[in-house]
Image (cartoon, rainbow, N blue to C red; front, side):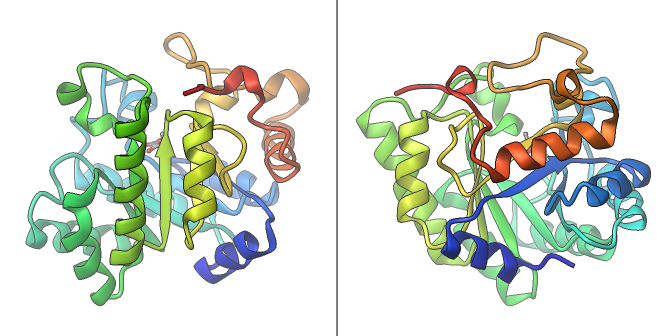
Length: 263
Ligand code: KIV
């Protein structure tokens, strides 16, 4: 069974780990056979499972349902579950929503935002719940950001992102996740952070990578993002695609420069 301390040790040894999204038991069991270390029950399920146009409609009940399903198929990977839109707007909501996901089988919860998350992270940590802070492109804020765009470009925005991420780690975040930021910025954050940094669309220097399972299996409702690679093209089974992804991440071969944003 993978634990947070194992991920911390991998970071200290300079070894990478892999993470994929998953929403149900069968794929979870195939992922653990492929030795994927972290399974993310992402609120991306709103889009890839429910067919919604964003993650905003996803509820805590939806997340708990899929977390329970993943937990039943898994004995090996660390399960991280997303707190969905507006389920952690106050400390009380945050604790109640997190309790539901942890009781459904999550080992840690993930929330999206910046410095405003510090009180939630402190409270969750003292209530026995580890947290991953998701910064950069935060899809739950799509209506504020007016679309899915690269974040942290330019000196001021880049410095702010690094400061906020490090302060959230200081507040107790066990993991950081950065989405769609320039590779140079993600590399600087990874080097400065004492906790593991997971990247998506953030270049190859982060301690770990995550992709949405449907994207890396080449089944998309829309056009795949620049940072996506279809691993089915080099595999003859779904398990083979998970293994190819895991090995590419561990070996530092994914993402390539064609999947990466520059400053
Ligand atoms: O919900 C999700 O799948 C995510 C990943 C894109 C990191 O948060």
